[in-house]
Length: 186
Image (cartoon, rainbow, N blue to C red; front, side, top):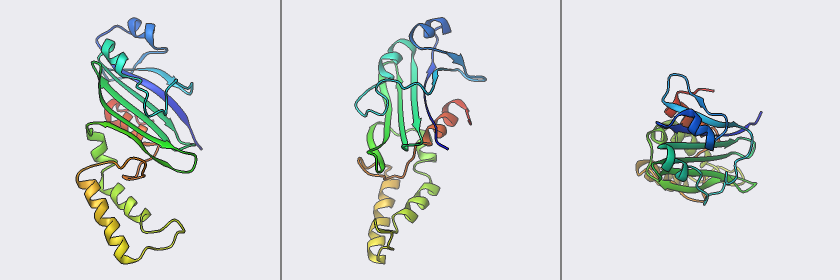
């Protein structure tokens, strides 16, 4: 089963009525300082476009704003986080129709990335994936050693390789982000 949704999340001192003037369906997240807005499967213009910013202007007015879009049918994630008009982080894991890769990486790494994307579990999954060539043949050990050394460098830095699957990601990272910032598990 696949799913698609996008939403804005705001941490603001503005009243909900003011938020509602700019974004539909604002709701306070229980036990949180965050408000979720426009949560649903209606497509927001600019989603999954690496050069479009969806939170910067809103954060000038409301403080802290996060935008998350997930499309598991195409394995795509669009994540943007801004505070007071400054982009803190933008990550786009986008599909070209054949495979998904990192298409946009801006800003500084956030804590959730260290515990998910750059986790030991993800490193081990990635090591397993790169053991094979595109014809699913096991790589020679010398070539595998070189690839594993490259992975170690990526994880130690930590760094993303644009137009590549490294470090390994997927659309469900949006749920990891929600858990980290808002305590949302569904």
